[in-house]
Structures are given as structure tokens and as C-alpha cells.
Image (tube, rainbow, N blue to C red; front, side, top):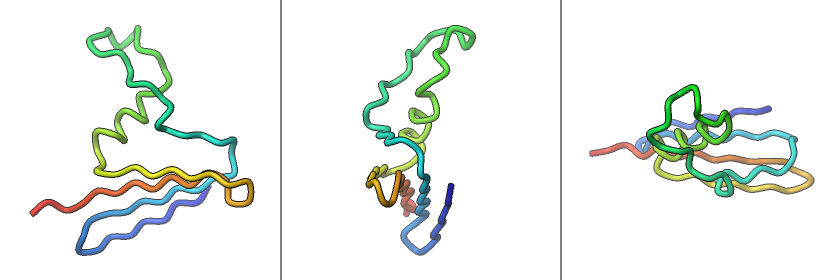
Length: 77
């Protein structure tokens, strides 16, 4: 896994690269709300948190390059 981080006047960009199986976070459903923590399904919560915390999520996959996940958080004025 490779992680790149860019901080500039616009905000923060995090790029995660791996050689794993194709994985598109847009295909992960939102976790159930108002469920006791012990009944929460273990998958999908991380993607939910990403969606809530960043302004943009971009996903790419290529057999040569693997998975590339880009997370962008813009600065607020």
C-alpha cells in the first residue's frame, strides 16, 4: 500500500494506492442507523465515515495500477 498526502491552500488531498482486488466504495451501502453497536455489520462503516468527513471521493482501478482512492477535504473560509 502507498499513501500520498498533499496539503496546500485549497485543503488536503490523500491518495491511497494498493494492488488488491478491485474495490469501488460507491458500491458499499450506508450502514444501518439507530442500531446498537454490537448489532452493526462490520463492513461499510469505514466508507461511511470517509463519505461524512471528506468533500470528494474518487476511485480508479486498472490492472496495471491497482486501486487508487483519492480523498479531498477542502478548507473552509
